[in-house]
Length: 536
Figure: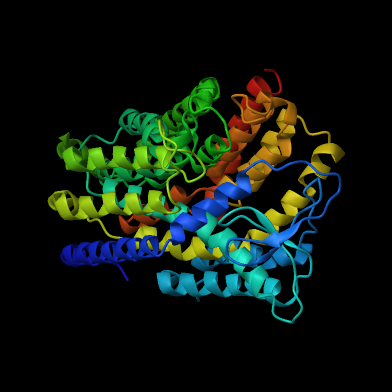
């Protein structure tokens, strides 16, 4: 159900009260000591332990779950290959249901999307609860390996998988997206520039720069609406949004760890905060190539095919750009960036010995959203026709995606070292392996799996988190750049698609979008690989 303009204040009030309730629950959990215990468990799990020769360790985790240490290589038997079927089916539903006459309107409702995603997620959970027999690696609140227990129903496995999928990955992911989406929705860039190829290319250039500074989600939410309004008189707009997704939602975010979640994970694993600036030649080549190709396509193919009356109307309705809501919400966006950069539970707060409590970072982000809704001007949101439909769509689908992809990630991790040795993986192969899987799996955990696979103990403590620099370059670029290959490669992709469709733009289907990425983005990435990775 789409939120109308008259419903916006009510929707904002409901969201505000929901945030207040969540923060209140967090405060109660803090009074009971839960975040403190979770943080202590996470720090204890990451603490160095004395090396032993083939000694099996057993213990009890912070949550009372029996744990079993992996062997010296960390090898754990993965699930069988067929367990990725729910994930494949979910990708198929996302790709096919909007195209089928019988399901296209049914699929438009977020409740139905959630039913499909949660149903397939339940099948994955049922496998772990009733069929899985090998130990399961758990990551929340700290790393441990969970053993099976006597009985038909393996509730410890269920707890571990849900902790990995939702508490460790989904909650921080969706809170960050929601925070950037909501606060950026309170900034209004008004005006209607002439929708020329050059103006559109300038939007993408600005977004590509901002993506590394305030994150791909923040940059996308800030600029997608003025881009759509500038092009509202034109009929051929879908290709412009596709290139916007390529650049602003993905490829622009590789210069700083706050630009894209995979790079932030690398920062948490010990990569220097400014190391990613070393990727500026690749950033410039890929984004520059995309902007040039877009300009040529629009200048010589799409723009000349617009109706004369539409071009005349576009020229007649030109208005210069004005920005409103930036005073409050601009500062709050910077607050989100600061919270993400400094409130990681696994690291001490800068200049102090205190480790932020588990989910304190998310509580601060939601608090900043509450300030935006309560203190920020309402008029920019009304003018933006701001609603929560796009972020709800992402939340509904990705809850299933995060659960269903757990077997795939575990299979990948169990076989990662073998694949590196078997196929003699150098930087180029790391780039394509990380990138290909990041196109369909979430790029953050995919990055982490290859990051850990490539670590060299002799490089521990260095600026690259123990990963040889050529491999870290390849892994970082593969995860960030190839998240643009599909709608599900990165969270902002889906949000921009949903916003564009709500504005009347007929976006390509799942496979139609991949047609653009395979024909345009993939050759650019192959050339980048040849110039910068294979021939450093």
